[in-house]
Length: 548
Image (tube, rainbow, N blue to C red; front, side, top):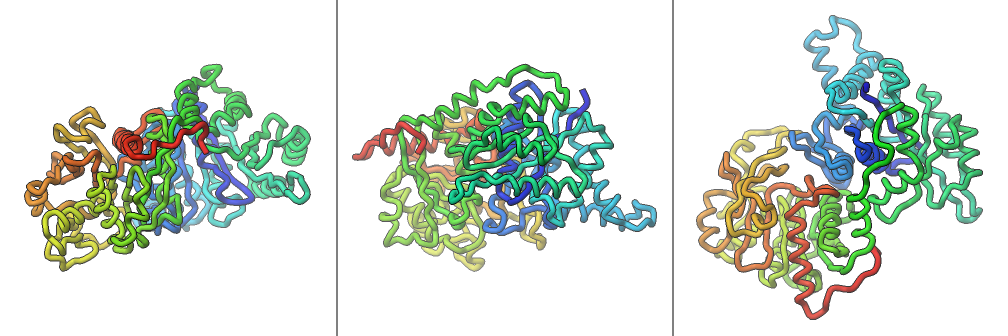
C-alpha cells in the first residue's frame, strides 16, 4: 500500500486543538494495526522553539535525536506510544535557512530563488521524507496557525501541490474549525466555519472532512447546513465537543466515525475495529480515581501551564497507575520564602520542583527543597530542580553557605553546579545545549533502581550545567547518593537521599518519555511515595468518585 498523507489545517481561531485531533486520529488508526506518524509544520521564522521564552511558546519538547520541537510532538508520542525525531517538526525558519544555504552553495544553478517553487518544494520534500522511508502507512501533517495567515500560505500551497504529486487517492484534507454557541441567542452559528472553508478554498485546498469544535452537540440540521454550504457530505461533518480530559477525545472521534471516514476515503486495508482495551482502562482510571492527593509544582512559569505540559500529563499517567487523582497546586517559586514555606507547602503530599532557566525564583525553589528534605515530604526535582537540590544540600548539610550554580553566581566560592566543559566556549544559544538521549547507569539499593527495574536506562536531556564532580566526594560523604551516572562521561544524572522516603533529583527530563500505555516509572514511584505520605498523615486522602 502506498503511503497515505492526511493534511490537517485549522480556521477561525488558534488553540482549537489540532494537535489533539491529530493525535486522536493517529491513535485510532494505529489501534487498527496501521503504522502512523505525525508531523508538525510551524509557520514561525525561528529555526526551532529552543530559544523562545516559555511564556511565548510553552514547553520545548526534545526528541531522542536531540531536536528541540513544538509541544504537540509530546501529544503525538503520548497518544501513539511512538518516538518522534527532528523529521517530525518543521519550521519556516528551518525551511528558509536550508533554502538559503543551498542557494549560497549554487544548488539552484543561478536561478532566481522564489517562494514558488523553491520554498514549497523544500516543504514538500520534508513531508515526503517521512513517507518515503517505508516505515509508515499513514503520515498525518498538522499545519500550525489558521488558514489565511500570511506565514502559512506556502504550507497550504505545498499541500495543494502534493495532492497532485502523490495522487488524490493517497491524500486527504481535514479542516478543523469552530462552531460557536451564542448563549444569549441559544444558537450555534455556522458562519465562521463557512468563511473558514471559503478561505481555504480560495487558497486552493478543498477539505474532505470538517472537524467542528463546539461547546454543545451538533444536531443533524446544523450538520446538514455545514455540509451544504461547505461542499462536503453530511457524514464528513465531525463534531468535536469539549471534553473533561484530552484522553477522551479518541473515544469521541471513534463514536463520531472520524477514523472510518478517513479509512473509507483513502481506501485503506486494516482491522475493522480499533483495539482500545488498554486505552479504555486508562480513561476509566483517570475518570474514576479511588483517592486524591495534593502535589505542588514549584516553578517559575506557573502562570502559563503549557510550559510544564509534559510534567502535568506524566503525573496524570502515574496517578492512573496508582488509582488516584492528583490535585496539582501551582506554586510560583518567586513567592516562596523561608518564612512562608510551611504555609505554601505544608499541606502537600509531594513536592515537584520544575525545570527552567535563569536566576529568577531560584531561592524560592531552594526553600522548597529544604522544606521537603527536612520534613520528609516526597520530593522530585527535574533538571534545574535537581540542581537546586544539590545547592540546598551543599549549603545546609555540608556547610558551604555560599554554594551556588555558576549560572546564577559566576564568582561563587562553591560552584557545586557548573557549566559543562564542552559548553564553555559556545556562544550561540540555539540548538547548542546537551540535547537528546544519553545512557544512565543506576546504583544498587536506590529508589531509582527499584522504580526502573533495570540497571541501564536511557533518558532525554536539555541543559548546559551539571553537578560539579570536584564537589562530588564531599557531597557523598555528607549523605547525598549519586544514584545514576552517565557511564561514558561520569556525569551525575540522579541524586537521592538514603534517609528519606523519596528524595530524587534527575538531570534529565523523564516527562518527555511518559506515555499513556507506558507511564514513566520514576513518576509512578514519586506518586506512589506521595500517596503513602498522604495515607500516613493525620488526614487520610480524600475519597473520590469522580475525576473532578
